[in-house]
Amino acid sequence: MNAGQAGTDLQRSDISQRVITLRRRLIRAGVSVSYLDPADVNNPSFFDDHVDAAVRAFQQSRGLIVDGIVGEETDRSLSEAQFKLGDRTIGYNGAGNTPTRGDDVTELQRQLSHLGFFYGHIDGEFGPPTQAAVEELQRNVGLEATGSCNGATISALARINRSISASKAFSLRDYERLNQASAALSGRVIVLDPAPGNGQSADSSNQKRLAESHITSDIGERVSSILDRFGARVVFTRIEDQYRTPRERIEAVHDSGASLAITLHCDWLSNPVASGVSAFYWGLPESNETRSPIGERVAHLLQREVVARTGMVDLGVHPRSWETLRSSRIPSVQLELGYLSNDDDAARLATPVFRQILADAIVIGIQRLYLVEEDDHPTGSLGVDDVGRFNEIDAEREA
Picture 1: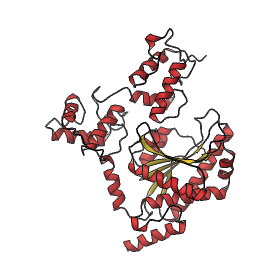
Picture 2: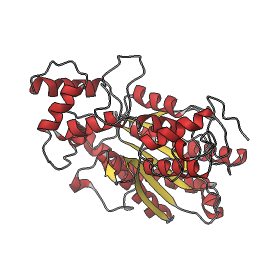
Picture 3: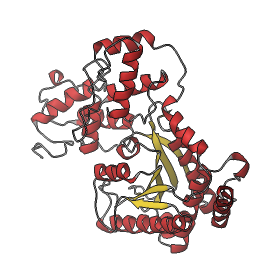
Picture 4: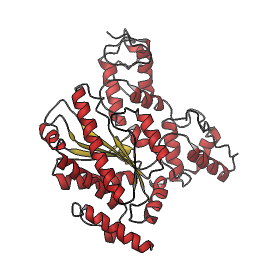
């Protein structure tokens, strides 16, 4: 049995003092499972079936990979789930310092957005946009504009927070930029994030991970080649087989100045029958609440174009709270291109012609995001030549 040393993942059958802490963190996060409380079991340091069930329930509620393993992302989500709004004073820690993150920050951003003070990306990270929104709220209610959310600020929020519909105020700025933008792709910056391989799956062999890396990189290069013809600039989060952590990939998005980020990924499942394509955007899976309306729109456009042009099984569009979707600060989508564990999907993805069809579909989905209603066409009816025509028309208008 694993001794569960600090700094390693925790999983079923581990014995460690950290499991006792894990039990308490799961309870504070709102997970309700029998025999989870350390006081209810003989050996609370043992990662038993009850702890495993609690971890999986938590992962399911957060849209994480449901594997029962407390790895980096699950641990981070658990840390954020420890705080409700009002539990602590929260504020901006300054550039270069580790930002304050948590469910309380997310709830603060949500309330500020519905009151019209916050127009940033709801990501649960207390940065300069959140600080500015808190300062504006404080000035409006006669408090000292410190930018930190303390008890007095929370009390003021409670007094003025009226029962209003979810106005999606946090997306107004993105929508305004989109409405003012031209249809041309020239000058736009798009981030492409080709997945390096499905390291999350214990069933994936090194060969399968290599296959995914090759496929996603090749499709990304094909998309980049097309976009480059129309004057768009593509920023890749990785080069060739270079491995970068999710946080490093997110930082690459932050540094790019891009307006859109697309992760390209291939699925793998132990059941070889699983087949099809899907798309994901930043939202809450437990309530289907959209946290990135532009991201949701892009996800639907990409999914529909891919399904229409390939005939692959349509597995739908779904909200997820994955770090790469939530913390990117711009509309972001993860596009699942098929299952390498399925013979039919894998055979198609291995074909250069099919990967070119996928690349065309992605480019056309991106283009449709920027088209005004009168220029748009039904799903699957546009070609890459039409993208060129839209960009020529826009250039003529500029002249």
